[in-house]
Length: 129
Image 1 (cartoon, one colour):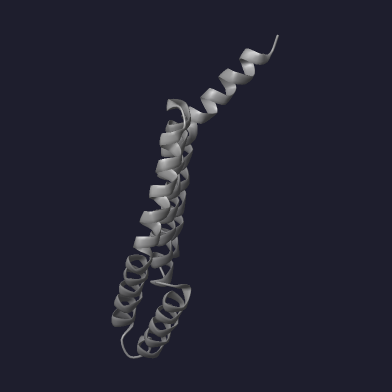
Image 2 (tube, rainbow, N blue to C red; image 1 turned 45 degrees about the vertical axis):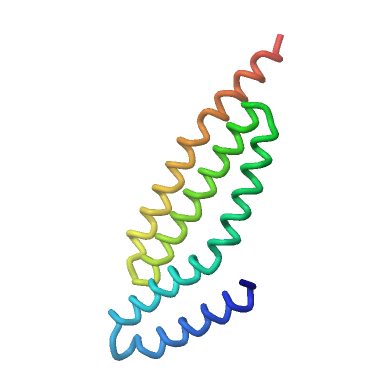
């Protein structure tokens, strides 16, 4: 699946949603959500392959490095899911909910990153006289 198919699907669904929005905003929202899911499913094989490559790189590293690769994958997953949810809410006109999803994603990423911050602080403090 190439970028042409993804872009063509997105543009076609956007035109369809815009055309229908005047007569039936609810149907246009359903088209928007369905197109988001369809595009996500279209890119899923490539995403799975990329995650597999990154996981293999993590397996080649020592246990500490593998831990960081796993953490990076989780952070990327949270970021993508938060962005997708916020975009769908924003498209539906619910910008306040979209902002809360963005905030929730950022807080979760901050919490996930705490072990790295603690390790960095420990390493730096160990280097200081």
